[in-house]
Image (tube, rainbow, N blue to C red; front, top):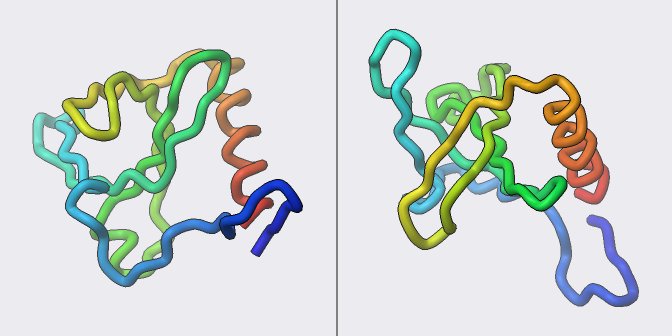
Length: 105
């Protein structure tokens, strides 16, 4: 675990065997079918927030599935809106922040 003299809490990803209800998100896929995803992290980049999402089935079965980066509009306590990130420079910036987060863990 990473520690900093100014930080009193340990920093790590949640590795619970199941997910909290607040972390579950249902989005419609391109085919119109609902997909149950888990919000793994929310990070900020250039005054916007982005969510790292994983398919619940993949995460529960330890399958190496794809992770999704989506722009996150809303609050953690209320309704949320997720938007695809299509700009390559924006996606690269968010991936860098997520990479830094993983290195801390």
